[in-house]
Image (cartoon, rainbow over all chains, first blue to last red; front, side, top):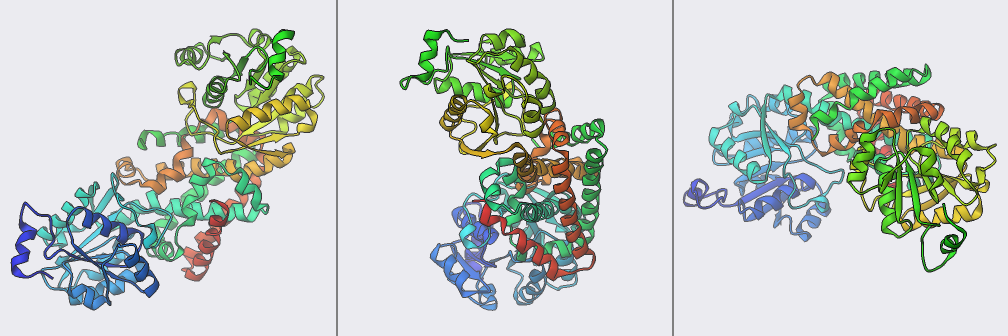
Length: 300
Length: 300
């Protein structure tokens, strides 16, 4: 945490340094690691403290130079100007409560979770609520752990900020400034809308990809054939099936109503393809695919 | 077609030129265009004749320098050493019959279709069957038309050759030599096995992608939200939904039994995810995803 003198640098136009320049990342993985690399690269922070469940992960992150120091949660939070939480969304709810009980009104707490409603609800009544900014940088890869962290992540992607009206305006401005410097496009939503949209444009893609991997593993007993034959199309649709269950199971559970809604629709859409093939209805099959082509209008 | 003297150059070790060096591509699009560019680049051919259903496409290919000449089918076939057919798989069956009726035993005919059984069956009794080599280069993009053709396509991908025992060994050798020069890995199969494997590692990916696009277009009425929020995960799972219905509907229909088989399995797998969410069965959800992770073992 910053002394009064250092605090001035946060407000200064000449330096982007956040307070004393100390960042705490809770969870040391793909997102937080990439975030730490980026913030140091941009001069927002000078010192990164990592909080990890396991010594192995902390040591890996230290060896990779992603964090400068590994500390227990309470010590790390107390020493930091900016606390960034990127762990599975179910664990986030509990840890965030601990963090919020520790901070002063000079610190900023941000999460990077893929669901927002449960977390925002859990913090609504917290006396320090206004030091928290709920965010979801919509970037990721199918890999996890500190070794998956990359520089130049986040660039060109959307970042959703939820319920900013409950956050201190200067804290929001700081977070906006950081994500903008990282090249992200800011979008504002209430937590419920975020979760609904996220089910459509992210969570369902992961479910279909996991299910597709299981389908092929079930049907295609000749694994050599998959390996030999799989082209770019298969790889791109099944890529997300490599994602971490520890990260994604809690997302699906926390957002289960929205995910179920879109999953039911997806199964209904697949049944239409099935009916076309069963009845050899070429015209309807063609129509379904022409309709799907409309996605071109929306994506690039 | 080649004179006796030029024919020698085919057998020469010093030049890869195929006969007189004339290639005919039937269908002037992504696959055939990329094939023509590659064959000219590697010195296999000097002159490319395009056969197209529409004058517009032929003119586009001429303007792009992908073909040197556009001719009707019969004229094009008669002038060519090597005939490469890459059109929708239903149209292929009829046109292939016409081509096979026109050729001599100095010419080689190859198709690039994504299904093999129906075509191979249709040519089984043809007196010129041994001049035909059934192939499926497993490369493609979601784009179509001559403007989608690229140099350095095919590289590093699998190419299946089917039922080579019915083809002239020297013709097979020529085709193997071409695909190998293009950087492809050759795999040999009977046509039925090919179609079964192709349903698993290619056709189902396209169906899920088309259905996913329809799901999101149906549920997410706020198209701006898709555009703003869609991250890399969504883009990669839905990318194939941009594919050409004219190309893919006949593939699904010709391979409908295999596609239905794997589609039924895929719907069953999605229902397992649905049941987990409905019953809040976290352990089983996790188990499904851990199983899906096994795809890592197979892909890269």
